[in-house]
Length: 152
Image (tube, rainbow, N blue to C red):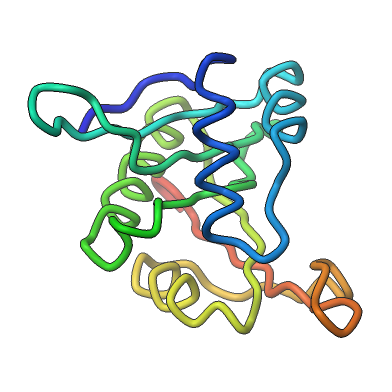
C-alpha cells in the first residue's frame, strides 16, 4: 500500500467514494476545506495492473499535542480485507512519530465494524457527543474514543 498527501486533483474520486459508502457523506467541499485549513489529508493506494488505485483516505486535524481523526474511509470493494486496519496503523505511527501523545475520534455507535476496529486497536471510550451525526430520524450520538500514543 502506498500513502501520499491528498491533492485537489483527488477530490472528485474521494468524494465519489464517500458518497458510495455513507448515507450522510462529507461533500467535495468538506474535503477541499480540510485541505485549505491545513489538515493532514492522505490517500491510500494499491497497485492494480501496474497502475495506482485509490482504495481509501483519511483526514487528521492536529491539536497542540494530539490528533483528531476526522475521517477514515475505505472504498466498498476493499472493505473487510484489512486495509482499514493497515491505514489506521499507518496514521498512528505517523502521528506518534511527529510527537502526538494521543488520537481522538468520533464514531457512530451503530457502526459496529468501525467500533470493533478502533477497540481492537486500543481506543477507549471517553465520552458521548449528543446529536453529533445526521440520521434518518433526526440525529445520532457519537461515541468519542481516545488512544494514548507513545510513553504514558
